Length: 315
Image (cartoon, rainbow, N blue to C red):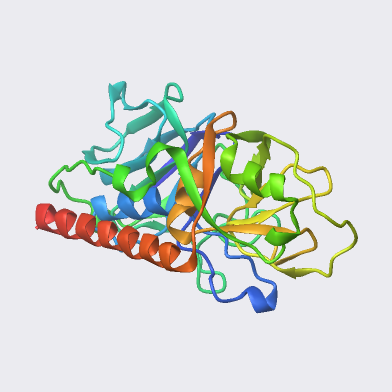
């Protein structure tokens, strides 16, 4: 009937698909940062892709299932075990009651998602279960999970269904090349900085969390400096603070900002940004609107095919 947090990790929260469509009210989107892994994990256990799950960061927590559950771990590989037996990443598994889930070491990725059939049960806030830490709303009491927390799920839905593993590589761009379209202030960059944005390799900096990630690489500058009127921003907006290091906004970002918006990560590649861990490197590739829309279509098509495969196996 519940999952117990035996030992808390550095940042574990309840997330679902978030609160889109409320930016005009100043309400951030929130929701799962690596939406691709989150959606795939839910499909593996027969859920809708927006069902509430636990987003896990490294160092990771220790959980105890006090009753049987059909679960999936998707996204980052943190070396998960169930009562000492390794659990495959991106795979569904039926676990008996009194099973302890531990994470031994970070192998790859930045965020893992623990999904259970039927989803975790927490109150809705503005139509979503997602935790937004800055405002202290949603999720489990509006905060990260702590030792002793008990998160409920529906025991009647838990049954030993077919245990299937998913190939999720197709949900991410190859070679860590992340696509963006030019932002409103892109042409304000010096020509050589426009080329550097695409031509240089970037690294995820230590100043990274659910609000965004600072990029380590060449310093960029605008042709003209000065104050800018605050304007709308969304997850994926690439801002350029005065220090010259670009910053990519993520799910918990504010809805307006005063830094120049030099780019916007295409929607299909937002999950690719979220799965990068501090120190990971990647490249940015400029695309046009037509290419961005095509990338989104292909991403959704891959997810639909994954959903069909999961439904076939779970019948």
